[in-house]
Amino acid sequence: MTDIIIDGIPIGILRKNIKNIYIRILPPEGRVRISIPKRLKKIELLRVIKTRLDWIKRRLSRLKEQPPLLPMAVPRLCPGEIHYLWGERCTLDIVPCMGRPKILFQAPSLIQLHSKPEMSEEYRLRQLDAWYRLQLKQALPTLIEYWQPILGVQPEIWRIKKMKTVWGSCNIQAKRIWLNAELVKKPPQCLEYVIVHEMVHLLERYHNQRFKSLMDKFLPDWRERRLLLNKPLVYS
Image 1 (cartoon, rainbow, N blue to C red):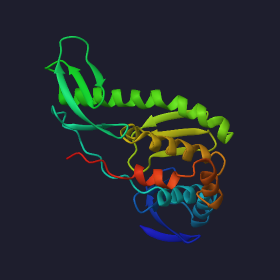
Image 2 (cartoon, rainbow, N blue to C red; image 1 turned 180 degrees about the vertical axis):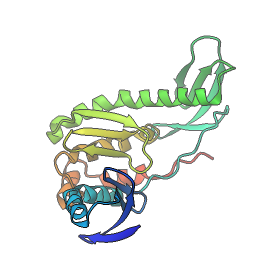
Image 3 (cartoon, helix red, strand yellow; image 1 turned 90 degrees about the vertical axis):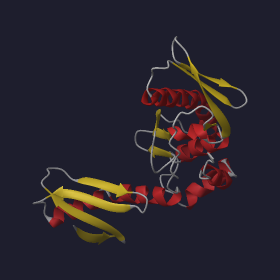
């Protein structure tokens, strides 16, 4: 692998037996790696990098602005195990049943997983993940609709998925917002912060002073919310 520096950014170049060019930003440090065809000329490589330089800078800026996520505890799905819902510690209760599997939340702090005794742990994990996704999916429309007229922007699409390095991301051109599925375990004000953060990117692409000024204007306590978001959950 060889390295070049463009606009102060070290970029690792790996020549491989491929037809296309692939650019990766590797967390947590934000190392830039580009795989290129073996016979690609340097002048063509530099041209491609310059056309993608804004995208590379945006990704590096996002990694710097939003600290890497702390590892989440891997549930074993044991009775009495601690789980989180909207920042609240909940106890897991596994209830054997012969009917349709389901999950019930018994306020204030009990999650009941109803499942057939013969179901595998993997199946129950998928059942719990699906339930968590549903809770997050149900919470999103109200928040997004609330902030649309305030910010004067409207995302075309929003989606949920598990992400290892960021709580949210925004595709400016498509006006598409992705939200980390783990947000359902954090306090509600953290979810609101991430939504506002990503929607403000529809007004300002970069994490520059204008972006921070917009966040200060619309969500003055966003820094405190960010600290809360990145505070690890306690499972012991």
